[in-house]
Image (cartoon, rainbow, N blue to C red):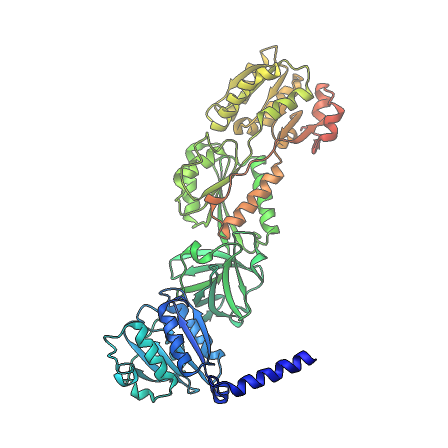
Length: 586
């Protein structure tokens, strides 16, 4: 208590005895808001602050830094400051372009005085009818005898600021300005579920602050997909949330901030940089749905399970087909000659994202889908050797590549005495040709003899099977990374079961279609990850920065009915490891 009393008495003594700080200055010292795109340590800011201190040593000076050459941001900051500061506040604005040419003084409805470049920076206050009595600053009498045309910008603003704070009549500064410069200001407007407005300013993190108020967003719900158009040119999507983390990393979000205005941002990213957005840009926002084009080479059970799981994941992420996503799907039905025309049909639907399912579909897509449309591939065995990667930008995807070491290791686990294996494959599928080369090179490490028969289409499955079966040494048929044989799996397994030859595949669907066993990637994970990838890209993630996703080969499927039919005993440890077990092969 003694310390507090001593400090208080000392302070009162200091104030009463100081020659530099008078009682009047303590009571009457004004607030000065200095808005500039110059840094605080620049000569012009130091000089202006010094000139203020010459008159009011205790003046409160608030410095607001704006982006260089950004009149729209400066206009916004001036409007906010004018609404926030008390009646004894003066406003000095020094922003380019135009700070070094025409300057003016004026006052607002509360009588507060402004020194501003005549470059449009006062447009928002003028639009609201808050400014009046505009005069140019040209009179040497208020510029300490200087000629405004010959003065440095530092000397000009220092002298003019002194005159402003001395409350000299505005008419003393120069001629009346009847038509001060303005910049285009767009007031927010609502028409149904379409709202137009303007970007007020961009903060240091690249978040875009708009003039769209909370009440205009009354017909929008949390989770809605916002389609955002910038200046009638650039278009992107954002999800309406409550904060940045309402979406995943690198995804676009819109939310109502503390000022009750709509803010557009990237969760951990820079939205203004991503879409080259500037303060003053016009924006149009609509509640919308996105269009996703899907191209199949063949709508097989595996392919449809992937897209089905993808849709389920999108729905989990709040992007359901019911409300926010339209799917435009086309199937080439194993006919590569149809792919080009089907791509054009999908593009004619004005899709926002293109999804290609399988290697042949993806090979066609990378060469025919315009690069401005994000392209995601899935269910592709080897995107690199198939020529899908490095063909275009705006591309990412997911691979179902089988690890052929893991595959053959599983084959030997389930059939440890296997010596002679056969394979049907389509050599015209690049994914299957890649698998063939991998298997051939690995067979010797597993002490296997390998016989393969190439078939050009699903219609040749029967003939190809008999070419293998006539080789009396074949003890098992291997099916891996081949769309054609996968599509003919039911026919193949039907023939093999009659001859009691095990078929070992690389998809759980193969077992559902009658194969004895399979080991593969987790296609449920592939499907779910495909949905996550579409959601991320739809909400602004750059496909070129998304890594191609690969999965481990560790999901076992078995068909116990097939095992019974061919008289095969599945090892108990493999039975316990199986994720899928089927008891029918009809």
